[in-house]
Length: 535
Image (cartoon, rainbow, N blue to C red; front, side, top):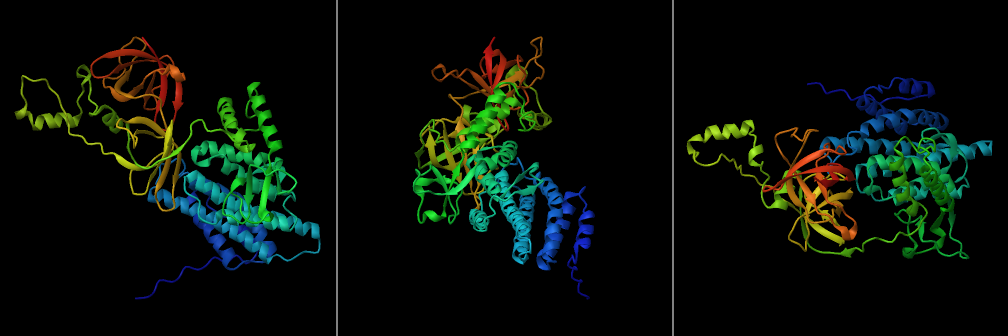
């Protein structure tokens, strides 16, 4: 039996061959284009052409690579974690593409020899180091967007490239980067600062939508931020970067070792820019007019207000103090399971609204000889809604930080949960505000509790005449008014039911009443919390 011939390695001998290959990429099929680009970069890394040709080919590959990897990232963006095997495979392919690109540019720097024109050579090396920072930064960004813990050494690599730019005196040499901004030049320091700003914006607590906005603004405003060594004559800043530590910007109280490796950020001009943008938005200018994107003004304003303190390095007093804890919290997800654990029994349709599914009728037909004609027709299927046990890391008055090392249900950022605290007996409603999958496969989630003790209810929408639009009720929750903290009575419903002024019929099993929806208080991945008016 003849052996299968080995696949021939792609040969990129010169600039023309490389350009022809890139021109033939099947961009309409991102999965195929991903494989083509992988072969292309592997060929360049295995048998690199002349440094000048290598640099030109890498520059030419940037735009198609960016398009393809963004398309591949759609497989796992905004997905629950842990990722499925298919989603994880897409994530790994994207990360490897960014790694290959960074390695190829680093190889380009090692092969390049000083040219006769010093200014041109410095500009070339500034561009190469900028690309190394950019693609190592993309590894960081992609981990944030996939809610994955960063791999060890990633910040050290980034610090190393920036420090090299400093040593060569090209950290602030202007560099063109059409992928980020075709209207203004950037430089190595700005690319480096961009990643530091994204990190201090609490990336694991933001949606992918918000992360993309944060990245855009950080890249646009990073040139306003200065990076400088510590000066003994100046007061120690609140936050610093240590180039020899595998950490991003962190409190200066933890600084150890030589101050030679410590850098401070001057964010004064950035703080003024954010204040100006907030002021302009409050004067009814649109985000697009300010170059802030196409999102709604209210959304952009809220996000900018959230970024104002960390990006100006102002310490924000925590509203509620956190306490280290030990214990186990019980967690249930899904409206049916949460209803069961909040109410202590499974959700059932009120009698007059009872409607039977095909499965219900099959059960009635099968066991019809056991039915008592004198009794009311009631089906009580046996249901079990297991809960998961999570370790309590810490807690505050309005939430918990929970960890789970074993396999369990997948969790989505913004997902509603019923949580029974380690020191309580009743289930509270909460939602995931911070979510990260550890390298070991465990999950860490920060949850914010919704105010008040929830009451399990059933609801159904009514039409303009006050008649039900559907026969069956659906499980939901009512939260009481808490005047002491300014909270109105509200309902927690599955998404898609809210219309301002729409009437609902709600039932607690014994009594029914009509309410009118007022406005949305919280909108997250799988629920809306809506204030209501009693009718």
